[in-house]
Length: 223
Image (cartoon, rainbow, N blue to C red; front, side, top):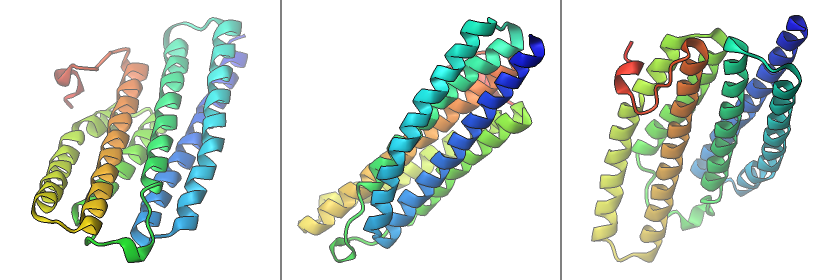
């Protein structure tokens, strides 16, 4: 029974990592579409999100089936619970990729220069997603904790973007500039939420490895 259970758990992990790779790609595609005003690519992100949603539901059902059939305990139980929770966070990251894609406009409507903070925020968010999935694969609690700690750097970059665009909105009467600034703010907020979900995943990895709940406990994530 133990060998069968471990085979099932390995399959759940592989499916979750495949979903994570698809979600990470969706975020990158959404940002690329926004930078290049590529509307077909933005629509592709929206279309592929339906497949991500379907896989999230299927993976959840598979996790519940393993729980019901095998009644795992200890580390096996923590792994399955972590896959369930990470699965949900990945689906939400995919939703925020769609939110970014829906902000894509034709190039002649971009009335405001691309803020320098947005590429920095994009790098932060996509790197955090990639690093936390890598931490899961390698069972690396230290790497998961580093993802949690990097959230503060993201917040500083986001605050700089918010200040810049808030000042722009106060100083302009150009409707095109206002619309574009609001789009950039919305994209920044979506990246902020992606960052938050990456931190959630990192906390789940720590729980899986150490059995420690680190939510709302800053000291528990210190190296």
